[in-house]
Image 1: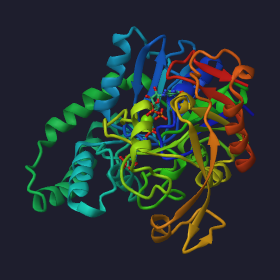
Image 2: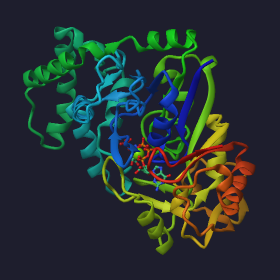
Image 3: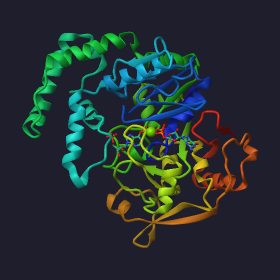
Image 4: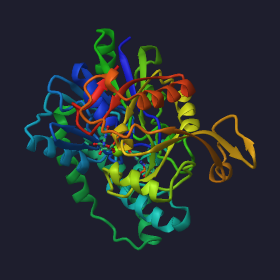
Length: 424
Ligand code: GDP
Ligand code: IMO
Ligand code: MG
């Protein structure tokens, strides 16, 4: 059993990119299992920053093979830009990046539909990234999606595209007044994309299952986070896929019996970008301080992230649904200057403590949080070399998290840089 799943435990942007890059230094394969270019995974090595949206965060390790699984929705423009960005840094992807022929394609009309729906929704907008994610998964679920494999047969691709465009542009043209687009040029654009990525496309299900049989080390990389999961997150303010660990099996075509470990990436406080409930949100100077020190601005859209204290109720729920046994706690250094740090321990609704993470939006929007307050460490963690050198206040913070969730804090991240990380 050789698959380790790395999952975001909160509302995304926990630092998955940094940790996946770190642990994939001795992995054979890193495979992304869901989401699309809505993700922004940041890796910093020796001060040099890379932001990845579709390509797995193992790509900076030259011996690591990277897989974009069937559960991912692929925007050719985003993928090409990313390949170019990596090649401009002399990072070669040829022969070590493989794309599932079952993955669905994001088309220009998906992005348009995503953006106009958001604009139209006004007060009810989700706050999506506008990358066409919802409409692409809509087509997948309604069985009209176009997959990578369809690019292999020009006639079939063109026929599918015509049917889709007819339907989509009925909405886009009649309701929103968009001009009809030129199907021929779209067909050419996607076929030229196919030529470029032709040698990367393969049966990744077979590739991964063969690697599992050979006992290779595989890291399954999730995008977004558990609370953005379409089934288990704060619906409807979620993304349109399953970021939770269970999504790795469907998103890669690997059996649950192959999974040996689930690592949860947990930011030492909480952030959320986009709309939706956020019980521990701080709309005050403290929230602003977290945003400023943590540089909490989206890696994909640049939007300011909403900030708040660590929410142990949500985290306990996340640990449960993901089966997290180990936690990588990131951005601890952001709390360096805080005299006191708070952690939410209980949700109260109408004066009563809740036993579990609520599902109803009316409850989620009207919760009161009980907090425990702990002393901050008030020193810079940056550059700490050993776990034992961490201040007692930080270790105490870990203990509260461990006692509440039952998962062990095994990795502590002290700055964006790969090197500034402690492993217990
Ligand atoms: P992801 O989507 O989960 O991969 O996370 P993002 O890359 O969107 O956001 C995490 C941000 O925090 C990035 O800018 C990282 O470079 C940065 N980061 C990661 N770990 C740490 C850390 O331990 N300390 C600090 N200060 N920044 C970190
Ligand atoms: P990474 O992988 C944080 C949020 C959007 C919005 C909701 C739905 O970098 O952690 P979508 O475009 O998916 O339809 O938007 O989900 N969202 C993310 N928030 N990190 C992400 O990815 C996100 N991907 C989507 O802001 O609230
Ligand atoms: Mg991100």
